[in-house]
Length: 236
Length: 358
Image (cartoon, rainbow over all chains, first blue to last red; front, top):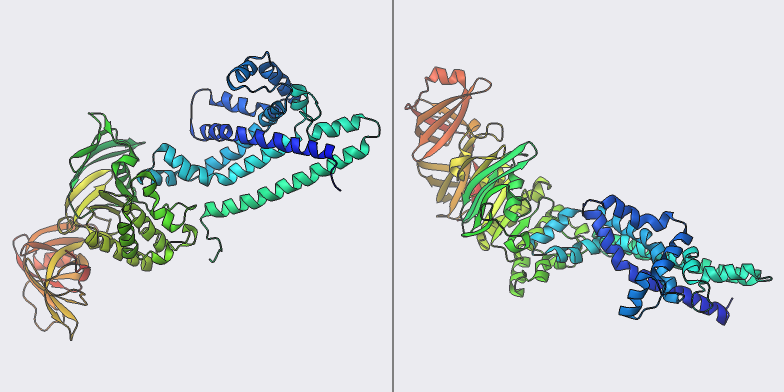
Protein backbone atom coordinates (compact mmCIF):
# COMPACT_ATOMS: atom_id res chain seq x y z
CA UNK A 1 0.00 0.00 0.00
CA UNK A 2 1.67 3.16 -1.22
CA UNK A 3 0.16 6.40 0.05
CA UNK A 4 -1.17 8.76 -2.59
CA UNK A 5 0.28 12.30 -2.74
CA UNK A 6 -2.80 13.57 -0.89
CA UNK A 7 -2.32 10.98 1.81
CA UNK A 8 1.36 11.80 2.04
CA UNK A 9 0.51 15.43 2.52
CA UNK A 10 -1.87 14.58 5.37
CA UNK A 11 0.73 12.31 6.93
CA UNK A 12 3.54 14.83 6.80
CA UNK A 13 1.32 17.58 8.14
CA UNK A 14 0.29 15.39 11.06
CA UNK A 15 3.88 14.49 11.84
CA UNK A 16 4.98 18.10 11.59
CA UNK A 17 2.18 19.25 13.88
CA UNK A 18 2.94 16.53 16.43
CA UNK A 19 6.69 17.11 16.27
CA UNK A 20 6.47 20.83 16.92
CA UNK A 21 3.78 20.51 19.56
CA UNK A 22 5.98 18.11 21.52
CA UNK A 23 9.20 20.06 20.99
CA UNK A 24 7.78 23.38 22.13
CA UNK A 25 5.80 22.04 25.08
CA UNK A 26 8.65 19.84 26.41
CA UNK A 27 10.67 22.56 28.23
CA UNK A 28 7.50 23.97 29.76
CA UNK A 29 6.37 20.51 30.81
CA UNK A 30 9.76 19.78 32.44
CA UNK A 31 9.61 23.08 34.32
CA UNK A 32 6.02 22.60 35.48
CA UNK A 33 6.69 18.97 36.45
CA UNK A 34 9.73 20.03 38.49
CA UNK A 35 7.77 22.73 40.28
CA UNK A 36 4.90 20.34 41.04
CA UNK A 37 7.29 17.63 42.24
CA UNK A 38 9.54 19.79 44.39
CA UNK A 39 8.10 23.18 45.28
CA UNK A 40 5.40 23.87 47.80
CA UNK A 41 3.60 27.17 47.58
CA UNK A 42 0.11 28.52 48.31
CA UNK A 43 -2.22 27.74 45.44
CA UNK A 44 -0.29 24.66 44.34
CA UNK A 45 -3.45 22.56 44.26
CA UNK A 46 -5.14 25.10 42.02
CA UNK A 47 -2.08 25.24 39.75
CA UNK A 48 -2.06 21.46 39.59
CA UNK A 49 -5.74 21.45 38.63
CA UNK A 50 -5.21 24.07 35.93
CA UNK A 51 -2.40 22.00 34.37
CA UNK A 52 -4.67 18.96 34.28
CA UNK A 53 -7.69 20.83 32.95
CA UNK A 54 -7.24 19.85 29.27
CA UNK A 55 -7.37 16.21 30.36
CA UNK A 56 -10.90 16.50 31.73
CA UNK A 57 -12.45 19.33 29.70
CA UNK A 58 -14.26 18.53 26.44
CA UNK A 59 -11.65 19.20 23.72
CA UNK A 60 -14.12 21.50 21.98
CA UNK A 61 -14.09 23.75 25.04
CA UNK A 62 -10.29 23.90 24.96
CA UNK A 63 -10.41 24.75 21.25
CA UNK A 64 -12.94 27.48 21.93
CA UNK A 65 -10.79 29.03 24.66
CA UNK A 66 -7.78 28.88 22.34
CA UNK A 67 -9.83 30.66 19.70
CA UNK A 68 -10.71 33.42 22.15
CA UNK A 69 -7.13 33.78 23.41
CA UNK A 70 -5.08 33.15 20.28
CA UNK A 71 -7.37 34.34 17.51
CA UNK A 72 -6.07 37.32 15.53
CA UNK A 73 -8.08 39.60 17.81
CA UNK A 74 -7.35 37.56 20.94
CA UNK A 75 -4.99 39.08 23.54
CA UNK A 76 -2.31 36.40 23.25
CA UNK A 77 -2.71 36.08 19.48
CA UNK A 78 -1.91 39.76 19.07
CA UNK A 79 1.18 39.48 21.24
CA UNK A 80 2.46 36.47 19.30
CA UNK A 81 1.94 38.19 15.97
CA UNK A 82 3.34 41.55 17.05
CA UNK A 83 6.44 40.35 18.87
CA UNK A 84 7.27 37.09 17.22
CA UNK A 85 5.55 37.36 13.84
CA UNK A 86 3.79 34.06 14.52
CA UNK A 87 0.20 33.70 13.39
CA UNK A 88 -1.56 30.66 14.78
CA UNK A 89 -5.18 31.26 13.81
CA UNK A 90 -6.22 28.88 11.02
CA UNK A 91 -2.60 27.83 10.41
CA UNK A 92 -0.79 24.55 11.01
CA UNK A 93 1.01 26.29 13.89
CA UNK A 94 -2.39 26.66 15.55
CA UNK A 95 -2.98 22.93 15.12
CA UNK A 96 0.38 22.32 16.83
CA UNK A 97 -0.63 24.67 19.65
CA UNK A 98 -3.93 22.87 20.17
CA UNK A 99 -2.19 19.49 20.12
CA UNK A 100 0.46 20.72 22.53
CA UNK A 101 -2.09 22.03 25.01
CA UNK A 102 -4.10 18.82 24.90
CA UNK A 103 -1.01 16.65 25.39
CA UNK A 104 0.53 18.88 28.08
CA UNK A 105 -1.03 17.24 31.16
CA UNK A 106 0.03 13.78 29.98
CA UNK A 107 3.59 14.93 29.49
CA UNK A 108 3.71 16.70 32.86
CA UNK A 109 2.33 13.68 34.72
CA UNK A 110 4.91 11.28 33.34
CA UNK A 111 7.85 13.60 33.96
CA UNK A 112 6.64 14.58 37.42
CA UNK A 113 6.38 10.94 38.48
CA UNK A 114 9.95 10.46 37.36
CA UNK A 115 11.16 13.47 39.36
CA UNK A 116 9.38 12.20 42.44
CA UNK A 117 11.10 8.82 42.38
CA UNK A 118 14.63 10.26 42.20
CA UNK A 119 16.74 9.65 45.30
CA UNK A 120 17.36 13.16 46.55
CA UNK A 121 20.41 11.97 48.44
CA UNK A 122 22.17 11.78 45.09
CA UNK A 123 21.46 15.47 44.60
CA UNK A 124 22.94 16.21 48.02
CA UNK A 125 26.03 14.22 47.04
CA UNK A 126 26.32 16.27 43.85
CA UNK A 127 26.19 19.50 45.82
CA UNK A 128 29.08 18.40 48.05
CA UNK A 129 31.08 17.90 44.85
CA UNK A 130 30.59 21.50 43.78
CA UNK A 131 27.35 21.43 41.81
CA UNK A 132 24.98 24.34 42.38
CA UNK A 133 21.23 24.05 41.90
CA UNK A 134 21.32 24.36 38.12
CA UNK A 135 24.32 22.04 37.92
CA UNK A 136 22.58 19.39 40.00
CA UNK A 137 19.49 19.64 37.82
CA UNK A 138 21.35 19.30 34.52
CA UNK A 139 23.82 16.58 35.56
CA UNK A 140 21.81 14.47 38.00
CA UNK A 141 18.09 15.22 38.20
CA UNK A 142 17.27 15.46 34.52
CA UNK A 143 19.35 12.45 33.37
CA UNK A 144 17.79 10.31 36.09
CA UNK A 145 14.32 11.46 35.02
CA UNK A 146 15.00 10.50 31.41
CA UNK A 147 12.71 7.44 31.32
CA UNK A 148 9.82 9.62 32.44
CA UNK A 149 10.70 12.31 29.93
CA UNK A 150 10.68 9.77 27.09
CA UNK A 151 7.35 8.34 28.24
CA UNK A 152 5.91 11.84 28.47
CA UNK A 153 7.15 12.71 25.01
CA UNK A 154 5.59 9.59 23.52
CA UNK A 155 2.24 10.07 25.27
CA UNK A 156 2.05 13.65 24.15
CA UNK A 157 3.17 12.76 20.62
CA UNK A 158 0.45 10.10 20.35
CA UNK A 159 -2.09 12.49 21.79
CA UNK A 160 -1.05 15.10 19.20
CA UNK A 161 -1.47 12.67 16.32
CA UNK A 162 -4.97 11.88 17.51
CA UNK A 163 -6.06 15.41 18.40
CA UNK A 164 -9.42 16.28 16.84
CA UNK A 165 -11.88 18.35 18.84
CA UNK A 166 -9.70 21.24 19.91
CA UNK A 167 -8.03 21.41 16.50
CA UNK A 168 -11.18 21.58 14.42
CA UNK A 169 -12.71 24.16 16.77
CA UNK A 170 -9.60 26.36 16.92
CA UNK A 171 -8.12 26.21 13.42
CA UNK A 172 -10.91 24.60 11.40
CA UNK A 173 -10.41 21.89 8.75
CA UNK A 174 -8.32 23.45 5.98
CA UNK A 175 -6.78 21.02 3.46
CA UNK A 176 -2.97 21.21 3.44
CA UNK A 177 -2.91 23.59 6.41
CA UNK A 178 -4.82 22.19 9.36
CA UNK A 179 -6.32 18.97 8.03
CA UNK A 180 -4.37 16.41 10.08
CA UNK A 181 -4.92 12.65 9.98
CA UNK A 182 -8.02 12.50 12.23
CA UNK A 183 -9.58 15.49 10.48
CA UNK A 184 -8.96 13.95 7.06
CA UNK A 185 -10.50 10.63 8.16
CA UNK A 186 -13.48 12.51 9.55
CA UNK A 187 -13.86 14.42 6.28
CA UNK A 188 -13.86 11.22 4.23
CA UNK A 189 -16.49 9.64 6.45
CA UNK A 190 -18.71 12.65 5.74
CA UNK A 191 -18.46 12.28 1.94
CA UNK A 192 -20.34 9.61 -0.02
CA UNK A 193 -18.07 6.73 -1.13
CA UNK A 194 -15.24 7.99 1.10
CA UNK A 195 -15.11 4.80 3.14
CA UNK A 196 -12.16 3.28 1.29
CA UNK A 197 -10.06 6.43 1.65
CA UNK A 198 -10.98 6.64 5.35
CA UNK A 199 -9.91 3.02 5.81
CA UNK A 200 -6.54 3.63 4.10
CA UNK A 201 -5.82 6.62 6.36
CA UNK A 202 -6.94 4.68 9.41
CA UNK A 203 -4.46 1.93 8.56
CA UNK A 204 -1.70 4.54 8.27
CA UNK A 205 -2.71 5.84 11.70
CA UNK A 206 -2.46 2.33 13.17
CA UNK A 207 1.00 1.74 11.65
CA UNK A 208 2.20 5.12 12.86
CA UNK A 209 1.02 4.47 16.41
CA UNK A 210 2.65 1.05 16.49
CA UNK A 211 5.94 2.47 15.27
CA UNK A 212 5.86 5.23 17.87
CA UNK A 213 5.10 2.74 20.65
CA UNK A 214 7.95 0.48 19.56
CA UNK A 215 10.51 3.27 19.37
CA UNK A 216 9.55 4.61 22.78
CA UNK A 217 9.64 1.16 24.36
CA UNK A 218 13.19 0.64 23.13
CA UNK A 219 14.26 4.08 24.31
CA UNK A 220 12.66 3.77 27.73
CA UNK A 221 14.24 0.38 28.29
CA UNK A 222 17.66 1.69 27.39
CA UNK A 223 17.23 4.78 29.59
CA UNK A 224 15.96 2.75 32.53
CA UNK A 225 19.01 0.51 32.33
CA UNK A 226 21.26 3.53 32.30
CA UNK A 227 19.54 5.07 35.28
CA UNK A 228 19.87 1.79 37.20
CA UNK A 229 23.60 1.98 36.66
CA UNK A 230 24.04 -1.35 34.86
CA UNK A 231 26.79 -1.97 32.37
CA UNK A 232 25.82 -2.26 28.73
CA UNK A 233 26.26 -6.02 28.98
CA UNK A 234 24.80 -7.08 32.29
CA UNK A 235 27.35 -9.47 33.66
CA UNK A 236 26.10 -9.85 37.20
CA UNK B 1 44.06 22.32 59.78
CA UNK B 2 41.66 23.29 62.48
CA UNK B 3 37.98 22.60 62.54
CA UNK B 4 35.82 24.33 65.11
CA UNK B 5 32.28 23.09 65.53
CA UNK B 6 29.94 24.72 68.01
CA UNK B 7 26.36 24.25 66.95
CA UNK B 8 22.84 23.74 68.16
CA UNK B 9 19.91 22.34 66.26
CA UNK B 10 16.50 20.99 67.15
CA UNK B 11 15.37 17.93 65.20
CA UNK B 12 11.88 17.19 66.43
CA UNK B 13 12.26 16.21 70.09
CA UNK B 14 15.96 15.53 69.60
CA UNK B 15 18.32 18.34 70.48
CA UNK B 16 21.75 18.50 68.95
CA UNK B 17 24.22 20.56 70.94
CA UNK B 18 27.73 19.86 69.87
CA UNK B 19 30.96 21.64 70.43
CA UNK B 20 34.47 20.42 69.67
CA UNK B 21 37.70 21.33 67.94
CA UNK B 22 39.69 19.06 65.71
CA UNK B 23 43.18 19.31 64.33
CA UNK B 24 45.09 17.45 61.65
CA UNK B 25 44.81 13.71 61.20
CA UNK B 26 41.73 11.63 61.80
CA UNK B 27 39.03 12.88 64.13
CA UNK B 28 36.50 10.20 64.98
CA UNK B 29 32.94 11.09 65.89
CA UNK B 30 32.15 8.09 67.99
CA UNK B 31 28.90 7.09 69.61
CA UNK B 32 25.97 4.74 69.32
CA UNK B 33 23.47 4.88 66.46
CA UNK B 34 21.09 7.79 66.76
CA UNK B 35 23.47 9.86 68.87
CA UNK B 36 23.47 12.62 66.24
CA UNK B 37 26.83 11.94 64.61
CA UNK B 38 25.53 12.13 61.06
CA UNK B 39 23.70 15.38 61.83
CA UNK B 40 27.01 16.88 62.91
CA UNK B 41 28.81 15.98 59.68
CA UNK B 42 25.79 17.08 57.65
CA UNK B 43 26.04 20.46 59.37
CA UNK B 44 29.76 20.64 58.58
CA UNK B 45 29.00 19.86 54.92
CA UNK B 46 26.19 22.42 54.81
CA UNK B 47 23.45 19.83 54.24
CA UNK B 48 21.87 20.63 57.61
CA UNK B 49 21.47 24.17 58.84
CA UNK B 50 22.13 24.66 62.55
CA UNK B 51 19.73 26.89 64.49
CA UNK B 52 22.66 28.72 66.00
CA UNK B 53 26.39 28.48 66.51
CA UNK B 54 29.35 28.43 64.19
CA UNK B 55 31.53 26.17 62.12
CA UNK B 56 35.04 27.37 61.25
CA UNK B 57 37.48 25.63 58.93
CA UNK B 58 41.07 26.89 58.94
CA UNK B 59 39.92 30.18 60.40
CA UNK B 60 37.27 30.69 57.74
CA UNK B 61 33.73 30.60 59.09
CA UNK B 62 31.49 28.53 56.83
CA UNK B 63 28.59 28.98 59.20
CA UNK B 64 27.99 31.66 61.77
CA UNK B 65 24.45 32.14 63.02
CA UNK B 66 25.13 35.52 64.62
CA UNK B 67 26.92 37.02 61.66
CA UNK B 68 24.52 35.49 59.18
CA UNK B 69 27.18 33.49 57.38
CA UNK B 70 26.08 30.27 55.69
CA UNK B 71 28.38 29.21 52.87
CA UNK B 72 26.40 26.97 50.49
CA UNK B 73 27.47 23.32 50.26
CA UNK B 74 29.10 23.48 46.78
CA UNK B 75 31.34 26.33 47.93
CA UNK B 76 32.52 24.70 51.15
CA UNK B 77 35.05 22.42 49.43
CA UNK B 78 34.43 19.52 51.74
CA UNK B 79 34.63 15.95 50.48
CA UNK B 80 31.84 13.74 51.78
CA UNK B 81 31.75 9.96 51.63
CA UNK B 82 28.28 8.74 52.51
CA UNK B 83 27.30 5.52 54.20
CA UNK B 84 25.65 4.22 51.04
CA UNK B 85 28.24 5.56 48.62
CA UNK B 86 25.74 7.51 46.57
CA UNK B 87 27.51 7.03 43.25
CA UNK B 88 25.68 8.47 40.27
CA UNK B 89 24.07 5.45 38.60
CA UNK B 90 23.87 7.03 35.15
CA UNK B 91 27.62 7.72 35.03
CA UNK B 92 30.45 5.21 34.84
CA UNK B 93 33.23 5.11 37.42
CA UNK B 94 35.50 7.47 35.46
CA UNK B 95 32.70 10.02 35.08
CA UNK B 96 31.84 9.69 38.76
CA UNK B 97 35.47 10.35 39.70
CA UNK B 98 35.64 13.36 37.40
CA UNK B 99 32.26 14.75 38.44
CA UNK B 100 33.66 17.65 40.49
CA UNK B 101 35.63 18.72 37.41
CA UNK B 102 32.36 19.80 35.80
CA UNK B 103 32.10 22.50 38.43
CA UNK B 104 35.68 23.74 38.51
CA UNK B 105 36.39 21.73 41.63
CA UNK B 106 38.39 19.19 39.69
CA UNK B 107 42.07 18.35 40.06
CA UNK B 108 44.89 17.92 37.55
CA UNK B 109 45.23 14.67 35.62
CA UNK B 110 48.29 13.69 37.67
CA UNK B 111 46.15 13.72 40.79
CA UNK B 112 43.52 11.60 39.05
CA UNK B 113 46.14 8.99 38.19
CA UNK B 114 47.50 9.11 41.73
CA UNK B 115 44.12 8.56 43.38
CA UNK B 116 43.14 5.83 40.91
CA UNK B 117 46.35 3.98 41.70
CA UNK B 118 46.11 4.53 45.43
CA UNK B 119 42.58 3.14 45.61
CA UNK B 120 43.10 0.43 42.98
CA UNK B 121 40.38 1.72 40.69
CA UNK B 122 42.16 1.22 37.38
CA UNK B 123 40.15 -1.83 36.30
CA UNK B 124 36.85 -0.29 37.34
CA UNK B 125 37.03 2.95 35.35
CA UNK B 126 34.67 1.91 32.56
CA UNK B 127 32.26 0.00 34.77
CA UNK B 128 28.96 1.31 35.98
CA UNK B 129 28.08 1.61 39.68
CA UNK B 130 25.23 -0.91 39.40
CA UNK B 131 27.69 -3.74 38.89
CA UNK B 132 30.24 -2.88 41.56
CA UNK B 133 30.53 -4.70 44.88
CA UNK B 134 29.89 -2.79 48.09
CA UNK B 135 33.60 -2.39 48.80
CA UNK B 136 34.34 -1.22 45.26
CA UNK B 137 31.52 1.32 45.47
CA UNK B 138 32.95 2.80 48.66
CA UNK B 139 36.43 3.00 47.15
CA UNK B 140 35.03 4.90 44.18
CA UNK B 141 33.06 7.15 46.52
CA UNK B 142 36.23 7.92 48.47
CA UNK B 143 38.10 8.62 45.23
CA UNK B 144 35.33 10.87 43.98
CA UNK B 145 35.41 12.91 47.19
CA UNK B 146 39.22 13.12 47.13
CA UNK B 147 39.16 14.41 43.56
CA UNK B 148 36.92 17.36 44.42
CA UNK B 149 39.77 19.47 45.85
CA UNK B 150 38.56 19.05 49.42
CA UNK B 151 40.23 20.73 52.38
CA UNK B 152 38.50 18.29 54.70
CA UNK B 153 37.14 14.79 54.17
CA UNK B 154 33.99 13.59 55.92
CA UNK B 155 33.43 9.84 56.14
CA UNK B 156 30.03 8.87 57.50
CA UNK B 157 30.13 5.21 58.55
CA UNK B 158 31.62 4.25 55.20
CA UNK B 159 31.90 0.60 56.25
CA UNK B 160 28.46 0.19 57.79
CA UNK B 161 26.89 -1.62 54.85
CA UNK B 162 29.85 -3.93 54.18
CA UNK B 163 30.61 -7.44 55.39
CA UNK B 164 33.66 -8.08 57.58
CA UNK B 165 35.95 -8.96 54.71
CA UNK B 166 35.08 -5.86 52.68
CA UNK B 167 35.27 -3.73 55.81
CA UNK B 168 38.89 -4.67 56.26
CA UNK B 169 39.67 -4.03 52.62
CA UNK B 170 38.18 -0.53 52.64
CA UNK B 171 39.68 0.23 56.03
CA UNK B 172 43.13 -0.41 54.60
CA UNK B 173 42.46 2.06 51.82
CA UNK B 174 41.30 4.67 54.32
CA UNK B 175 44.54 4.16 56.26
CA UNK B 176 46.44 4.61 53.02
CA UNK B 177 44.73 7.92 52.39
CA UNK B 178 45.32 9.08 55.92
CA UNK B 179 49.04 8.39 55.58
CA UNK B 180 49.58 9.25 51.92
CA UNK B 181 47.38 12.22 51.11
CA UNK B 182 47.46 13.70 54.59
CA UNK B 183 44.07 15.29 54.30
CA UNK B 184 42.27 15.94 57.58
CA UNK B 185 39.48 13.43 58.05
CA UNK B 186 36.35 13.45 60.18
CA UNK B 187 35.31 9.84 60.57
CA UNK B 188 31.89 8.88 61.91
CA UNK B 189 31.52 5.43 63.41
CA UNK B 190 29.93 3.40 66.14
CA UNK B 191 32.46 0.59 65.75
CA UNK B 192 35.23 0.71 68.32
CA UNK B 193 37.68 -1.32 66.19
CA UNK B 194 37.51 1.27 63.39
CA UNK B 195 37.89 4.19 65.75
CA UNK B 196 40.83 2.70 67.62
CA UNK B 197 42.51 1.79 64.38
CA UNK B 198 42.08 5.13 62.63
CA UNK B 199 41.58 7.97 65.05
CA UNK B 200 44.04 10.49 66.39
CA UNK B 201 41.34 12.48 68.15
CA UNK B 202 38.10 10.99 69.41
CA UNK B 203 34.92 12.98 69.96
CA UNK B 204 32.46 10.92 71.93
CA UNK B 205 28.89 11.86 70.99
CA UNK B 206 26.00 10.83 73.18
CA UNK B 207 22.37 11.93 72.82
CA UNK B 208 23.32 14.86 70.62
CA UNK B 209 25.99 16.18 72.94
CA UNK B 210 29.73 15.81 73.17
CA UNK B 211 30.51 13.57 76.14
CA UNK B 212 34.28 13.65 75.79
CA UNK B 213 37.04 14.89 73.50
CA UNK B 214 40.61 13.72 73.56
CA UNK B 215 43.18 11.41 72.08
CA UNK B 216 42.09 7.87 71.33
CA UNK B 217 44.11 6.76 74.36
CA UNK B 218 42.27 9.09 76.70
CA UNK B 219 38.71 8.71 75.44
CA UNK B 220 38.62 5.01 74.67
CA UNK B 221 39.92 4.19 78.13
CA UNK B 222 37.13 5.89 80.04
CA UNK B 223 34.55 3.31 81.06
CA UNK B 224 32.17 5.82 82.63
CA UNK B 225 31.48 7.48 79.31
CA UNK B 226 30.32 4.70 77.11
CA UNK B 227 28.88 1.93 79.21
CA UNK B 228 27.07 -0.30 76.81
CA UNK B 229 28.49 1.27 73.71
CA UNK B 230 31.39 -1.11 73.54
CA UNK B 231 33.40 -3.31 75.78
CA UNK B 232 35.61 -1.20 78.02
CA UNK B 233 39.35 -1.32 77.89
CA UNK B 234 42.53 0.63 77.41
CA UNK B 235 44.14 1.96 74.26
CA UNK B 236 47.91 2.31 74.40
CA UNK B 237 50.23 3.93 71.91
CA UNK B 238 53.58 2.18 71.90
CA UNK B 239 56.71 1.73 69.83
CA UNK B 240 58.35 -1.45 68.54
CA UNK B 241 61.74 -1.93 70.17
CA UNK B 242 62.43 -5.55 69.34
CA UNK B 243 61.24 -8.10 66.80
CA UNK B 244 61.78 -11.77 67.57
CA UNK B 245 61.27 -13.16 64.09
CA UNK B 246 61.71 -16.76 65.19
CA UNK B 247 58.81 -16.75 67.60
CA UNK B 248 56.97 -13.94 65.83
CA UNK B 249 56.87 -11.90 69.01
CA UNK B 250 57.47 -8.16 69.15
CA UNK B 251 58.41 -6.17 72.20
CA UNK B 252 56.65 -2.84 72.49
CA UNK B 253 57.71 -0.02 74.73
CA UNK B 254 55.15 2.34 76.16
CA UNK B 255 55.05 4.95 78.87
CA UNK B 256 54.96 2.45 81.73
CA UNK B 257 56.92 -0.54 80.60
CA UNK B 258 57.01 -3.10 77.82
CA UNK B 259 54.55 -5.50 76.25
CA UNK B 260 55.12 -8.71 74.31
CA UNK B 261 52.73 -9.02 71.41
CA UNK B 262 52.51 -11.61 68.66
CA UNK B 263 52.21 -10.93 64.96
CA UNK B 264 53.07 -7.24 64.82
CA UNK B 265 53.61 -6.23 61.24
CA UNK B 266 55.85 -3.26 61.94
CA UNK B 267 59.55 -2.44 61.89
CA UNK B 268 61.63 -1.59 64.91
CA UNK B 269 61.10 2.03 65.86
CA UNK B 270 57.67 2.21 64.29
CA UNK B 271 54.69 3.30 66.38
CA UNK B 272 51.84 0.90 67.00
CA UNK B 273 48.58 1.12 68.89
CA UNK B 274 47.24 -1.74 70.95
CA UNK B 275 44.02 -2.32 72.77
CA UNK B 276 43.63 -4.23 76.00
CA UNK B 277 40.10 -5.17 76.90
CA UNK B 278 39.18 -4.88 80.58
CA UNK B 279 37.92 -8.48 80.57
CA UNK B 280 41.36 -9.72 79.57
CA UNK B 281 43.09 -8.19 82.58
CA UNK B 282 43.31 -9.99 85.93
CA UNK B 283 44.77 -8.53 89.12
CA UNK B 284 47.29 -9.98 91.57
CA UNK B 285 48.68 -8.46 94.73
CA UNK B 286 52.05 -10.18 94.36
CA UNK B 287 53.96 -10.87 91.18
CA UNK B 288 52.90 -14.37 90.23
CA UNK B 289 55.55 -16.88 89.23
CA UNK B 290 55.35 -19.93 87.01
CA UNK B 291 52.50 -18.56 84.97
CA UNK B 292 51.82 -18.64 81.24
CA UNK B 293 50.82 -15.00 81.06
CA UNK B 294 53.57 -13.03 79.35
CA UNK B 295 52.53 -9.51 80.17
CA UNK B 296 52.53 -8.62 83.82
CA UNK B 297 52.49 -4.92 84.55
CA UNK B 298 53.22 -3.36 87.92
CA UNK B 299 50.95 -0.45 88.78
CA UNK B 300 48.85 1.35 91.32
CA UNK B 301 45.09 1.21 91.72
CA UNK B 302 43.65 4.56 90.90
CA UNK B 303 39.93 3.92 91.06
CA UNK B 304 37.47 1.12 91.77
CA UNK B 305 34.04 1.63 90.26
CA UNK B 306 31.03 -0.55 90.83
CA UNK B 307 29.33 -1.62 87.64
CA UNK B 308 26.09 -3.44 86.99
CA UNK B 309 25.90 -7.17 87.50
CA UNK B 310 28.11 -7.41 90.59
CA UNK B 311 31.23 -6.36 88.73
CA UNK B 312 33.75 -3.62 89.27
CA UNK B 313 35.93 -1.69 86.90
CA UNK B 314 39.42 -1.17 88.29
CA UNK B 315 41.65 1.55 86.85
CA UNK B 316 45.33 0.76 87.30
CA UNK B 317 47.94 3.41 86.62
CA UNK B 318 50.93 1.82 84.91
CA UNK B 319 53.48 4.56 84.35
CA UNK B 320 51.73 7.21 82.28
CA UNK B 321 48.87 5.04 81.04
CA UNK B 322 45.80 3.56 82.64
CA UNK B 323 44.99 -0.11 82.19
CA UNK B 324 41.50 -1.29 83.07
CA UNK B 325 40.42 -4.51 84.60
CA UNK B 326 36.92 -5.91 84.88
CA UNK B 327 36.52 -8.29 87.80
CA UNK B 328 33.74 -9.32 90.16
CA UNK B 329 32.87 -7.31 93.22
CA UNK B 330 33.68 -10.31 95.39
CA UNK B 331 37.19 -10.66 93.96
CA UNK B 332 37.80 -6.97 94.53
CA UNK B 333 36.64 -7.26 98.13
CA UNK B 334 38.83 -10.32 98.78
CA UNK B 335 41.89 -8.50 97.44
CA UNK B 336 40.90 -5.38 99.34
CA UNK B 337 41.37 -3.19 96.28
CA UNK B 338 41.42 0.51 97.03
CA UNK B 339 43.03 3.53 95.42
CA UNK B 340 46.74 3.71 96.08
CA UNK B 341 47.26 -0.04 96.43
CA UNK B 342 50.18 -1.52 94.47
CA UNK B 343 49.05 -4.37 92.24
CA UNK B 344 50.07 -6.40 89.21
CA UNK B 345 47.92 -6.35 86.09
CA UNK B 346 47.95 -9.71 84.35
CA UNK B 347 47.22 -9.12 80.67
CA UNK B 348 45.89 -12.20 78.93
CA UNK B 349 45.31 -10.80 75.45
CA UNK B 350 46.36 -7.76 73.49
CA UNK B 351 44.87 -6.81 70.17
CA UNK B 352 46.79 -4.76 67.71
CA UNK B 353 44.74 -1.77 66.61
CA UNK B 354 47.09 0.02 64.31
CA UNK B 355 50.54 -0.68 63.02
CA UNK B 356 53.20 1.13 61.08
CA UNK B 357 51.63 4.56 60.82
CA UNK B 358 52.66 7.89 62.30
